[in-house]
Length: 411
Image 1: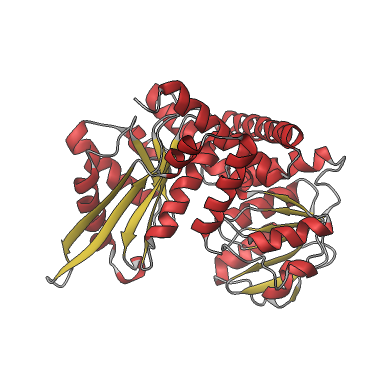
Image 2: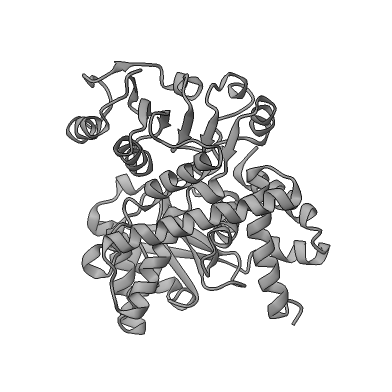
């Protein structure tokens, strides 16, 4: 099942549990606006190249729309729609005053020079500058984009609207980016894990963890778990996988990956089959990479007692049912990986106030938000007698539906 079908299914299930009016349900699913633009730029060799850029703005009942911009050759409109919708529910679960959006450009960033990427980003911004804004729609980095991309958008947007640091988040620190933003999603995953484990009378210290994906999110989550006395016994990424039953030295593994670009030939552990990681013997499994990695083929063999969804949509609905029967507790992506958008919100707040926080304040406030959101999800689970995924979806959908009705949605 693809991301859009799964998100729609979860939404409809939540709407049924909440007893939403069918008209409200329908209006919540329909995106507010879909933008498609043609971006033509001169390449370095003098030829012209054309790329399709787009932005889906899903909902603005609770505040400006928020979501990433990705540069990827296969930008699928369905997937972008699903991710924009997911951002609406995610922001509501985290209780930050945003709706959802998503967008990007269909290109392969690896094939473009830095100056070509800059020209493309600036042309894209010129085409959508009057449809984004500090109180309208606030983009952020995603696959194939980074802080530099945000810096170009900020500069181009500011030519039309005056200096506006709050128009994008995930910026370089020198241009008003927030301290703690780089680690935020991984750190949020750890705070979410701590909240869940505390509910079961456990803590990170002494438990064993397997981490699938060792990019930004996976490496930060593993590093912080390691610092807190958790044993990370298996790690994998696109280059391979490493295991050590006594616990991997994560700072050493990060150094190894930075110097060699891969997990291969790491001295502090044995190599293993990357596919085996998902069914490795451990207490907590954290998928941090792609969607759909837990499915009906492997779900029955999962040995972890807890799964923390740091990736978007790593568990197929079919796998969900199998895991539930086994008594595996799944902490859903819509909550578990919301640390990134929460610290993006802190960045936006700091920019609007023109007053920056120190990193300790960012991390402490993030912990407060993640812990409070978990307790709000648990209340929904008890009220509606449902699992954590439906607890999170009902919490998010209910907040957006209430805001929509209060604003007078038929007006």
